[in-house]
Amino acid sequence: MGRPSSLQEAALALGVRGYRVTSLSDAVFSIIATITTVPLAASVSYDRKTEDSRSSVVDALSESKYAILYCVLTFNIVSRMQHYHAVIFDRVKRASVLVVLANTVYLLLVSFIPMGQTLLSEASVKGDGGPDYIEPVVFFVGLLSLVRFSGAVLVYLLPMGGDSFRTCLRRRRLVQEGAGGLIYGCLAVLPKWMFTKDSQNWGIPCYLALLLAGYKGSKLASIITLRRYWRYPDDMVAKTIHHTAKRYSRSRVDAYTDGVLAISATLIILDISSCETGSVNSPGINECGDVLNYLNDRKSQLYAYMVTFVLICALLWARHASMWKYVTQSGMILHALNTQCLCFIALMSYSIELMMSFDENDEQRRHAVTFWLSNVFVISVCILIMGAGIFSKHNTLPRDEKEALHKRSTRRWTFLSGLLLPFWTLLGIIVTLTVKEGQKAWSLAIGFQIILHPLSQLIVFWRYMLAHERERDTAGDLEEDGLTRSLLGDARRSTGEGGGVGGHSTISRGYYSGEVERGGG
Image 1: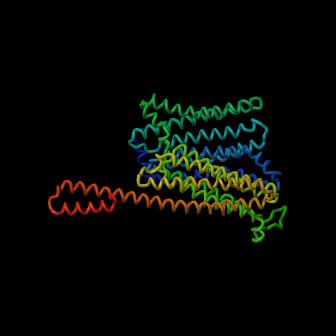
Image 2 (image 1 turned 135 degrees about the vertical axis):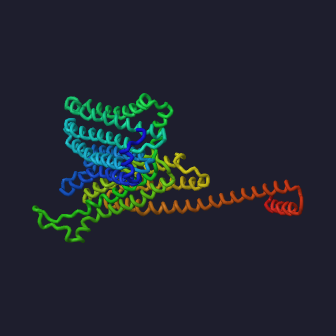
Image 3 (image 1 turned 45 degrees about the vertical axis):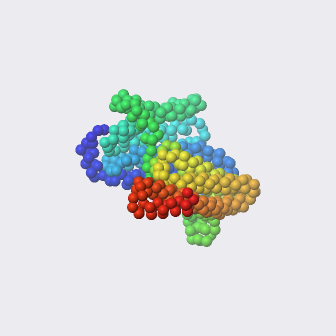
């Protein structure tokens, strides 16, 4: 991994700019992460169209609990891979043809992860025990092994540069991904013996522990290899373990977040746009021909879609953008908080499908609205914690003393503004639990989120603007007073040095003494 070979040099000459590779990769990662929620929403939509929906919201959630768990887990895995990709491409200016091909293979393998999630979800619905999990787990863990191997190849092909620390860091990631792929490949065959009916009670927990131990073992193998094989000093190896070595540019966060928000906001329209044009069993049905009847049948669905679209694209996106505009680099903690926030935003399509499924049942629709509001409440809490994490990490903010006042005002505005969304959402949950009519509960929830919440945001913004103007005027007065004092000091020193020689010193002394008298000393 020293000097690049002639093949790598030729491939680099025919390559592309690094930001084009990262732009495409972030778009693919955002799509893969968001479609992990599609099986959940599609299952509820299929049951509604076939009139086989569950009797209550509680039954639907109870049946989908493992599917929701796999969805959250898969979303975090894909987001973790996006973090790995962002870190290794952090300072790459140009990507060779070989890097483009390796990156394509890496993204291709990552795109199969939602398929493994669907297989695990279907196996959990059957509920026959461990044997049904054998093939899905083998496929999923084997796929993770291939992803890690392809990640190691991608790191190997990236240009190294002349920095010894960056070279050490790349080598550590190369060994870690290669060892992780080897460990996961060995663990992929174990479910055939650990997931039988006789051993499933202890086999499944032990297998999860082995997966976690394999992940930690790959890190340990990379550290040992750096120290024993490449003979790196302990201080440099310690720097590669430190969290600062896992930071990457904020532009990758913006691209990934915008992609997830855009897809989550428009995903539900796919189900609303479908219409029946007739079939063998019902040849007379043609919903696409009668537009007014088509829109009237989907009136509640369109209301839910528009409310969710405005909530995601206007309120949540604006909150995220206002917090992250001062961040220069993102680390592990901010990445984890942002991932949980995006995961629950992606789950909003499932919440909307539940409301559509129980539209005709007034009591169950009220419960579905409560679940939707609970989803929004979790998102608001994640955003509030993420904002506190952003402004508490001073090393991620620009270190410019001129912007200290603006950062302090922005921190106060972000905190007060961030409290409004969980406040109105929690109030909406209380109201929906109190009101017995589903339609009225939904109307109140819309009023809280779309009317009262933006109005309260405008009031807080107006107060912030007035306070910021006062602080800026105060800072300007203090700066002007400091400048005056500095001029007075310079004048005294100049008159003292002049010793009264000539008429200039006498005039200056009389002028500045008058200034002192008028200024009150």
